[in-house]
Image (cartoon, rainbow, N blue to C red):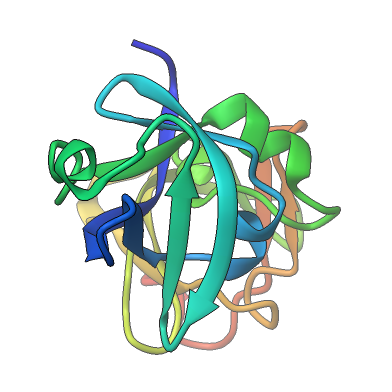
Length: 168
């Protein structure tokens, strides 16, 4: 299976003509879409509009409510490569951060990004340090603490504040 990224979910039908009510994570990404993948099927977006906090999408391949019911509850995917091609400078996929080396602003290696946790305010980087005696270090993923993310160079530079690192 291709490397896919979920961008939304078909929540229900909208009317009887096969339009889908879609919950989405990023409205900007939806606006220019032409094709998506649902249940290993490539679907062409014929018409897209927004209604309240949902997108209403008419797929060219689906002509009525009965055909759409086969896709109800399914995630909508894009190929990862396609999403990466639309990213702007300083924009990246959160999953691409896992495995990057993390350095402080003095270029000392702190560890490697182990995972990213979601929180209400911002994402949290979980960093596995070089020395296991400290356990994972949690760093809020905000520009003030994480000023540089270099995906191509495979590194992140953090600006530690007092008390952020367990050995400080």
